Length: 245
Image (cartoon, rainbow, N blue to C red):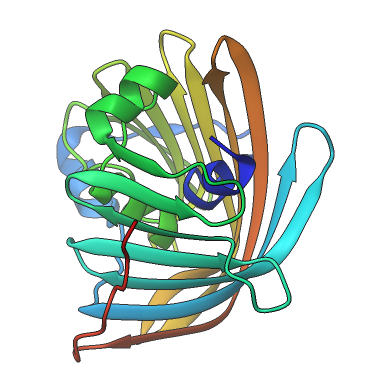
């Protein structure tokens, strides 16, 4: 499993910060009235971004990433480091993660159950969408813990052995910082979204910083990914998602 694949999909960096303000804990009725998370709504998306991948050995890979998506159906991506040569192409669907690695020949064809067994992180198409669009990880429910601290809501969600802690802006309802941890210490996923832009009259994270840390073959692996979108468009006209092994 090479660092380009890990970086491209386990999108990743939380800057955890303390706050001296006294938090306001809402009861359930107040939560429903005050907390309004925003979900990016579209039919088809086409985007282009600059990507920088840093591995734990200090090696840096720079390139261009193209992303296509159909809401709740598929996320397709292609990474080109330079000279117009595609390094890898991948597709995420409701059932699988598939990646064609043209440089290292380390192709990936895994179900989400297989991914969790190997890396200790519970993923799904929904989780990938929410990470990419800075949505809250899971639909909010009364079993979740919600605090308001100044201009942010802090939402803690536990699903199985995975804990999600989101810092959500009160002005736009989008996640600005996210921490995902496995309670059996098998892996962690961190994300930071410093800036947003308007896309189809909706806030979209045009810059992202991600970090992944997990075990592969008994060794800790880390990747840091910087993504800066240069173009984002949505349409109701179908687009293609070319992929084959």
